[in-house]
Length: 580
Image (cartoon, rainbow, N blue to C red; front, side, top):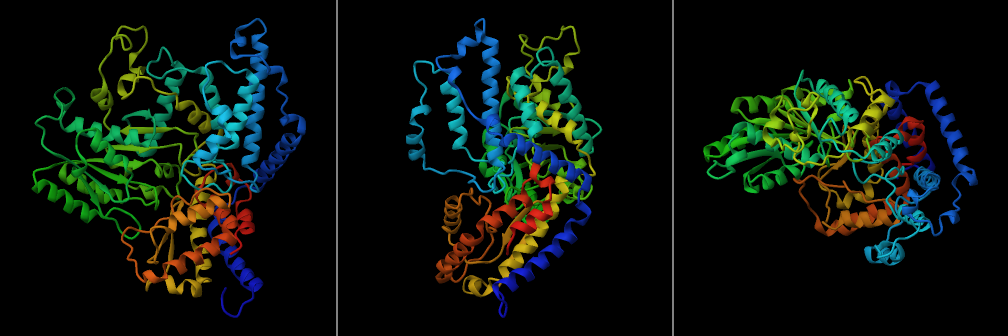
């Protein structure tokens, strides 16, 4: 508390300042009032319907001694419809519980405890169970799951639930088809081509190539694979034997998947150069050029530079134009890992963070992150058309015959690493249709998320200042700073932090009914001093979190998560919940 102020006076003064910051930050982002009123009315009506006991009550007696094989009987279809209806009730009840901010994010139990509690339904038996038991299993499973759409869930950057996207996943499961040829997935293949073309236009490429992949790590693997094929196509047939050493360059803040790709493709961890970053976590272009020159002097051929746009922890965007200049100068493949941050291409306000993206040779983009598409949905984009099939194609004649009755260029399977490929396009396509993603706004959410991150950073900085007396003994000469990098808010300070601090705070969060503060990190270059003050600092932060954790976590959700609740009364919710 600030000196000379009572608790109430301090709270009021901070709240007035926070409201001013909020108004300054969010004024241009306020949604249309008529839309808000309509949405609030529809939400209230939905809550009314869901609250009716009959709608979500469970009576599964009709499924006793009825088994899955009975779906094929004479009365099977009616039973199938009834069974799916009950599944729908279970899911609806779960979705309703996720919106209740008075409930826990997770009913946490240690693995051995949870195994004992669910012992009756975990094991796969020799005999089948009836449908009543299966319905109970579904209900029991969701009971102990992490509620990723809960207002206080803030563990990962792919969170929440988009109802239209979930419906798309249901339809995808019902269609249950593969994605390797047009003949087996005609509609989905066309959808994939159309959506990929729109995304390439956002990148700034008139043409190019793309394929949806099972996650950003595999998309990054594609990028390294393609880059290696372009500089030496013979590796596809002859392998890496006799090939000069190749080098990859990536920032110290980049995702581990770049190093994993080096391992899988025979390049080796020792040939991955980690480039230092500035104070905001952005790759230092001068350090990059120095590293490339060192590699060349040692007889190592620079293969790929990975520029990260939206780093996992800090949300930093590497400077693309300076990196592109260096790549062009030395003839190096430029890949952009935009798994997290690529979706800012929809926003006129934040698109500048990816200035120069059109100069990249390839890009990873995960719609299941910032765009909120249900897991999983990731794609690799390559500027050079045809190179994906060139590196991966084997023309297996039992799938990819050239004499089919249709245009076989729509048989995309030979461009992919895997044969069986999940349909990840329909949910994205359906969401795109429902929300009309466009560059001016991503249904308000993208702009709000960025503005609220800055608002939260400023607010928490002021909040920490109120605790300066308690923190003084644990603070080094540098002042604390909370920095906003688009949608990530991170704590960059030279505080005394023991290695056990983050686990301690994580345990505290779990006990308070919230998931881990997964991204509570300190910059790797932080200097730690005054080790005798570590326990005092930890105790102070623990006291703070015990009293205000619920309010802080609620505010953080609105700052770093993009989901349905962000659309309704965002500012009011923040002002209500953040009692600093």
